[in-house]
Structures are given as structure tokens and as C-alpha cells.
Image (cartoon, rainbow, N blue to C red; front, side):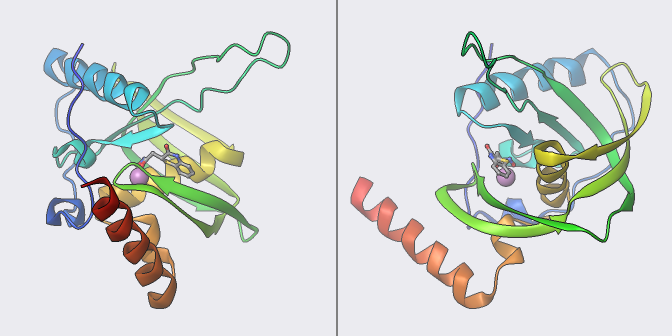
Amino acid sequence: MAILPIIETPDPRLKTISSPVETIDDDLRAFIKDMFDTMYDAPGIGLAAIQVGVPKRVLVIDLQDKDEETGKVIRDPRVFINPEILEESEELSVYNEGCLSVPEQYADVERPAVIKARWLDEQGQSHEDVLDGLLAICLQHEMDHLEGILFIDHLSKLKRDMVLKKLAKARKMAA
Ligand code: GNR
Ligand code: NI
């Protein structure tokens, strides 16, 4: 079990364009396990490798839905290696997004509501599926990280500056 430090804005590494994974081996699988440990500890519902300083096209997602009856969290870990978006709906959805690299700040972001995506899993198996709801939102948020984009980059400069100002203030209070 290894919890890796999460990089926060304005660290320039978050602007890196991550490189495709060429070999899916035990080293990569060990790193993916560390990514899950880090994501669950944070806690978050997704994590891209660049958020722990590794510029590879790898991301993990677990929406951790709650069971209606027992209230227990259902774990549903998903791994996406070299993900691609093949199609996106014209219909958009708005979600109040957050990011572990922009801690405790939230803002509404509009994205395609439904996407068709292709990716590899940790065994190198190829998958193609139509995704919607929070999974589609989270996958697009994580895929943005692979291009060096944060959710605040989708906001107007005015809103982005407001979020960054609030973050600076929160950090100052915590110092
Ligand atoms: O934990 C997270 N929650 C979240 C909420 C709405 C939209 C996207 C996310 S992803 C985020 C974790 C993170 O920063 N992943 O990159
Ligand atoms: Ni994020």
C-alpha cells in the first residue's frame, strides 16, 4: 500500500501532455494499485497519473456509489489506459466538479452528457462502451488531465480567478 503525494495547482507538471502507455506489465499494475490507494485515501472518485507526477495516459475511477438499503459503499474500481473518446453527444450536462489538484473548490462545468469511449484495461484488453451520467463526466475530467487541462480551465477567466483566489485564501488560513 502506498499513498502518493497529489500535485496541486499551480504546479506546472499538471500542464503536461501525458504519453501513451507502451507496455502493460507488473510495474504498471503496481503503480495502478498505488493510484487506487491514493484515490481512496484522498478521498476522490477519480485520479489521473499526472496528479501524482507520472506523465502516462493512465487513470483510475471508482464512483463508490452507496447501496440504497445498507448505506454501504459499493466499490467499483475501473482502470482506463490510453483512453480515447470516439463519439460525444450534442446533449450537454452540467455538474458541480471538484478536483484533488484544486482542493476543496467546486464549480459547474458543462460537458457532453454521453460519450463513446475506447480504452485498455490493466490486462491489456481493449474495451469500447457508451458511458453516461457521473461516469462520463468523471472520465472526461480525468482525460482532460492527460492533456494538461483542469476543470477550472473550462470556466471564464473571471470565474477561474475567483476559484484560484478562494484557494489561495484557504491555503493562507491553513498555513
Ligand atoms: O474526486 C473527484 N470528484 C469529482 C467530482 C466531480 C467531477 C469530477 C471529479 S474527479 C475528482 C478527483 C480528481 O481530481 N480527479 O482528477
Ligand atoms: Ni481532477
